[in-house]
Image 1 (cartoon, rainbow, N blue to C red):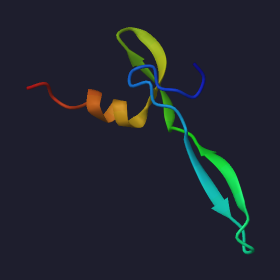
Image 2 (tube, one colour; image 1 turned 60 degrees about the vertical axis):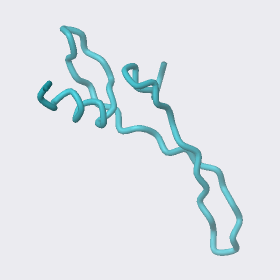
Image 3 (cartoon, rainbow, N blue to C red; image 1 turned 90 degrees about the horizontal axis):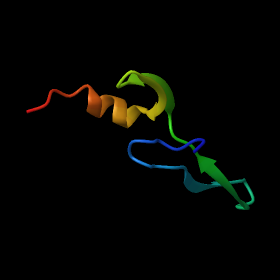
Length: 58
């Protein structure tokens, strides 16, 4: 459960960093997880979900 958002189940993205000689090194781009109290519980939630929770319900 580490480094994944519990609400949207998103994880890391794979990408490549390239050196000057064009050698590829695989790296992980992790989510921006923040602690937030949701429903009386403290959870690590991604910032995209925090923005969605702040929207008014129509």
